Amino acid sequence: MEVIPDLIGERGRSMENLRQDLVRNHLLATMKPGDFARLQPDLVRVRTHLDQTLIVPNEPVLRAYFPETGYASVVAGTDRSRIEVGVIGPEGLIGATPVLLGSDRTPHRTFVQVPGEMLAVDTARLGAAVEVSFSLRTCLLRFVQTHLIQIGQTAYGHAMLPLQIRLARWILMSHDRVGGDEMPVTHAFLAQTLGSQRSGATLSVQALEARRLITARRGRITVRDRKALEALAASSYGLPEDEYHRLIPQGPDPERGAGI
Image (cartoon, rainbow, N blue to C red; front, side):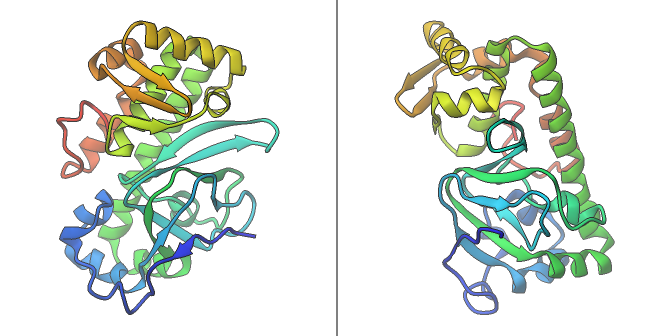
């Protein structure tokens, strides 16, 4: 069964006065006003919690989510052996790919990595909206394009790159989405995210800390030198981020490096 976040709004009531210029999700904020107006009555504000499952693998996707704060991980594999293949935060839409590509489910699980608030919409209503609006479909498919590139870059990194470079890329991607320099993460989760043993993840964190790129405390990593992290990550980071800015040019502040 799909795990439903705690509701803190009601469709048709608290969301009916939602203004596009005040939303914190970049897709909603930058789509055409008419397309936002199509979705606005059906949006429900929800609050999420850590590790909460939003998309259950191989079950119908009943809701899509526009994150405003926090972000979610997309993982492949089983509960005992899984690896992160993508992240989605305030730049995008969770659950978009199957809905927009003519399916109703995915084999990948999506769960909350950093809690926050999201605007949820029934996938049936989202599907109906994109059926009558070519511009809305194009807007959302452009995000799907950037997310597919991100997944490809992640696969390349897992197969070809040293652990420290993969860690630097992951920290940058997380930094892009948390709205600050500090992010909650455990070494056990990093190992799962990077497809490594926990000891390897710990040694990589210590190596970046020794180079003064980050500060690591129990359950927390703080970015100290983003430019140096970008130099270390090199070409492993930036391709999907640049594609996002190419396709969605009025998105987030480009002063935050190449990041989303």
